Image (cartoon, helix red, strand yellow):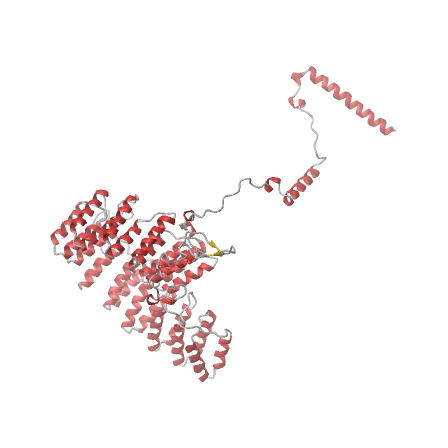
Length: 615
């Protein structure tokens, strides 16, 4: 009862104080702070801990039950994926990074080593890995096959990468296919590829496309159709390309129609204020062949009077024509003018091909000292700069010296190449090794072969086998062991025939322990062994009482043998030999899956397939 009275008294006192305070605020509004006029707000939670617990409870509920907005479906359905092939674009250069760049570099190194079969195998197998090749990697091996004259392999690889494996081709991919068709006499197939680009590709044909098509048509005796393609190129807004005009001018000149050639040349000069001087080189060569030297030199002087700053490719074409027709003074004057105009980084007037042309002419004339001077020659103009020779230029000089067995001078240029922070490539070592082999210089072969392998360069089987056989015949079988061991540490592994040659040489010299060591490495690397080699090993080591070791080694891989490597034209994924193909094997219309920019097809059960159901 006492407690009740105490609480009642406190409440009454608080009420009286609040009423007095309100009367005071009403009577003196100017003296009242603004915050006292704010309405009283009660809190939802009695403490901060309770508020924090409520926030945690709401977060848990949102994790378990998403908000209603997330469950709401769009009233307008999304459109289905477009079937328009133009909506699919090829890889950009930004895709060439990380593992895909490593794959590209690996394929390129095999191409530079001349091992096109291994390069193609690496690129094909990567399609099924997590690191699929970019369109640039595919184009690299396809172009290498074309340059090697393996047109069937070029077409087969295009079919494999872009039609069967659904990699999107770019215009370079199509150009490689078109030129392969044109060079193999299938111009109509190349024209079909051209129309396919226009109808399905998200890009237009390039100047290079028209160059290949016009040249192919002219070589097939269809020059009028080539003229039609020229007009089509101009009508599509591509502009006048000097090399397309040059193809047609050369075609009419070979037909003896100088009037039409001059008409096209005048049209080119009317469309372009600056054109490629290769056209003048074409006229000059034709005039020289006709015995009309004066008119040829008039065409040359007319070009020089225009004061064009010619790129090295154009100037090199002029140099070749002048040297071909014994105009050596004019060629030297042009070469000196090019050196004077070489002012990098502003303008590059010469390249290694320029020096190669002049050096080769000196060697052809037997002027060795002049060739050595030409290789070091520089311009005399104040603004000109000496040309920084690249590996290709050094390789040409080393090759010329090796041909006349001047190995001491070749070694000097090799050392100079290494001293310029340039890396000798496969061609450098291959040239010098073959020269030493021809001279039967065992130490030279062994030294350069060792350096080549230590540099990590690929040695293709045809050269490796030849060099190992030479060393073994000269009694250097044991020296071959560290070379072959080093070769086996890198992919792709040495060929089974390479191991066969070296192991047989070791066994012949009674070095069975070293031979068994190489066999163990071969088995561990998964290289394989042919039946004939397997039989030889069992007999040879059986005579030494070691048959059990060989059987134990091969028992780790039951049935461990392989057939000899197939010929390049019969490798998996490539085309059969030409004599085994039908007349329309590579026909554009007969390639059922030739729709690289088309989406995948579905069969009646909804399963994904790579070709139309009716194909």
